Length: 256
Image (cartoon, rainbow, N blue to C red; front, side, top):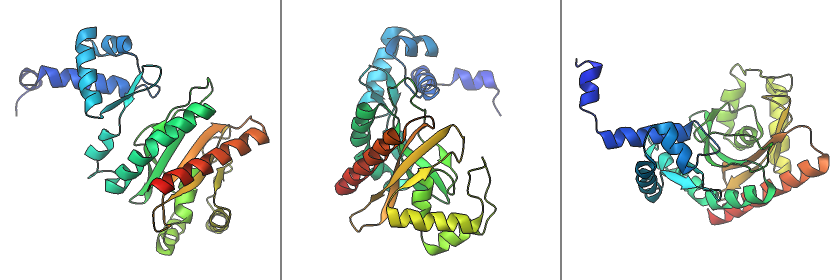
């Protein structure tokens, strides 16, 4: 087997620089401007500029209004076989412009998730501009029994899938995590009836979230749109975020 020096000598320098840039941007959920990209990846500004333009052209990156570069939706389609498949790609493509607009309007982070082999995976994100907007990571996997978006997806899963989840050991993250099967089943029934979900601090007591279902043409729930926020806000503001989540989810559903 060749040693590391042999492998390095046979690598493509352009691809190595591209991967260095993607790696640095991956580490910064809020994105990086051109100068920071070049500095962090150890390349000149002109080199970074050319690589970034190529990545933008192939939707590997997106450029925000503040000129920062973030990861793009093309990465999801490349990962179809190991993550969310064609459904996640379609949902992400339909959702991205809508959640970008919602995020610009309310200043909070907005994300869209789908079910993926017993877990929940985030397929689209628009990061909030407010100083206290929470972070999220594209491709992040979450448990299916905890969190506003996860509970929306589980509530509209098949009865066999719900029974499978309820029959397994449910991890507890905070005192508000629903790990008792009967309590969770009651919560799922309520979510189906009311058409939305609230996370009262199931991962972190200082963080809450609201979520609404995204439906396909047949009316089936295929994804969930959620908005995370800090818990120390007014009830009126929380209600406005829930309204925004429901309206955006309906808009994406119309497109799908």
